[in-house]
Length: 410
Image (cartoon, rainbow, N blue to C red; front, top):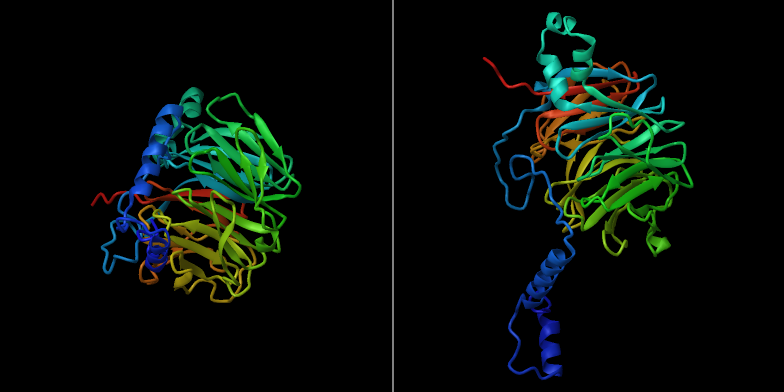
């Protein structure tokens, strides 16, 4: 096994010590035995494998790619298909892993769940036909399928459970709530967790069994969704020193990444809950606003209040690419996110000063055309569909806009 893992010298020393006969050739036998063991355990317990909705294309992999032809549209080609308004600034959002549902959350403490197909149908229906709908039809076709009220303060973060009809929400009211949105009559959460500080960010484990939570506190919490037991990393000296602003699981569930007001990005082992690497002052010491993994879990995309977007390679712990040109007047006042599009060919990031969308080629950092986002306030959340050419923007102007790239008809 040591040979197989590249520790030749150690392997030779060990085989000399134990006088192994015959000498051990490199082997992946241990890996295979463990794999078979895990597979049979899975069959016996009937537990599920982590399934992913994989978007078209293979995603970004800079180890092998030299010149990749993009198969997806750049940001400037999207258009608004639907706008929904809250009664206060709209600051949180989430896409379901199927790409079929979107949730938005607001300072008015409400959460809306929108149906993507209905939004697309609505934008394709002429106004005169919509005007002729009966109240019953209007209700059946309305894109907002649920409005949930159970928080008493601003909703700061949302995430859909990967397999069940459950939405988790975090709020400045010190609570995390779980809503079962498949039942039309349900307005209240069926479960909640009381936190010790206002909740800033959360992320479901790809199996749905665990929930990562960051609050106005330096310690990241990991909750077991079934028992609500809380785990924290056992080595406090490696934790963040200021409140956690962003948390995200990697798609293969081996790792998770966190960002903080202290300016550091940390990558954690998803099983042992220990910090594997820290990118110190990742954004020039400014607050880290978002971290997200590429689909192959090899890279982390981050952005900070220095208005820069960076791509980090986890195998070498270095910053590979810096995407520049947003925030020409310097630092941002509010946090926003940098996101991959569904094929990872492009990176989207809302520029606070111009309220337009910056878009770069993810592989060579080439700036694409800007897209005016049409909001009258800073965009506080942007999320791209994992499965198709669609994204959502949530803004201080109380509105959430759904954007879609319609197929060319000409």
